[in-house]
Image 1 (cartoon, helix red, strand yellow):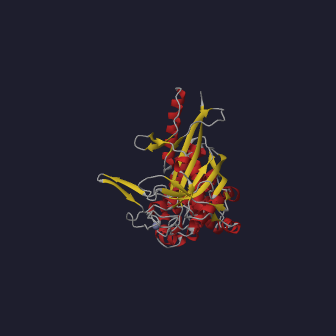
Image 2 (cartoon, helix red, strand yellow):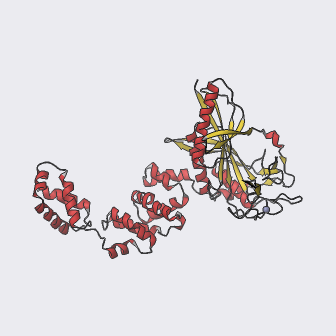
Image 3 (cartoon, protein in one colour):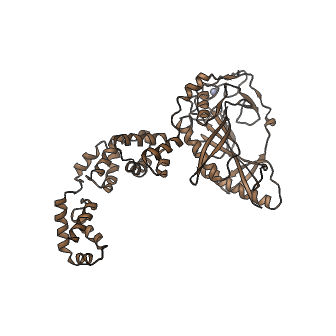
Length: 474
Ligand SMILES: [Zn+2]
């Protein structure tokens, strides 16, 4: 029997606010344990939560970017469970009245795109962290109360590749609208796929297994592929799948049972009596809608259409808003999109990467980069030379023209000078010239090489090639 895989996804994204969801404590990552806490996020008796307006704003903008309906009245609810990193004994979340519902996000696999339906997106607070050491376990509550948006899809995905593509699209969107830093290593974006199999052609859903807290594209792919194999084997042997939560064990490359799956009623959700229903005016929603600029997929399409770029280039350039902005700043100055795109994707990104810096803080402005490429286009220097001097352009503050003059890198393009070089080569290599004239055209490579050598590498190779051909055929 063949099976179809059905996957839905929950993603927790940390919102980029300065302070926590219900108190004024800072959200900065990596500070000494328990230094960013107060009575509210420590869960002390009598402390009262106050909603962070910026977090609500970011949640609404997320919903709008994901084509959701934003609830004008929504409610915070208590999700009750005990864990040492949750001092109140409950997490403030949203239950039956989430802030956003019924949206979609487009993903792309093997050149075809697909819309994944978003069931809901709701606001909640993060828990703290348990740190297990030899001497015992410790609790760090710096993270407790950090605002999260949990984005839940319908079970619309069918493979690990679709899930990875969805996650990448979602991360791009969240970073584009500046609500999440997308840093998966620091846990700013964590995902929980739920996965079931059913006989191919069936409409019924099988029993699902939830995979907990995965924070890398690679792990999510590995875990899903493992789980598909495991469930296929169980069902193939006539067994049944148990509804449970499993963890991905990175070292062993397999999933293992964490706990049997709890149901929503196990949490005894009820409206948080400390917080009044949150009312969001239509006016405010429209104000926030106006702050959402072009999203990555739309920009990608526009790059294909307006600049005639290949799909790959458009994908790389629009993967970050800063890079896409940089590219467009260059194109405005110099209408050579493909030349610019090639240079950005190779030399430019490599140099940034090596320096461990970002596009936003690139020391090379679009003006200086374009200055370099203009020298290539008007044959002052070859592309090879442009690549060679780029690290110097990057490290200093000279213009490309200054560097080329100082180093005497100007390319030899004068026809008279090139012809005298060529004539010298022809005179010194009669045997190769005879071979060429006798029909062995590949010899031209050798002759061009000789002329390039004589010029100290400065001759324009295309021109040398063309002039040789005219000279030798006359
Ligand atoms: Zn606090």
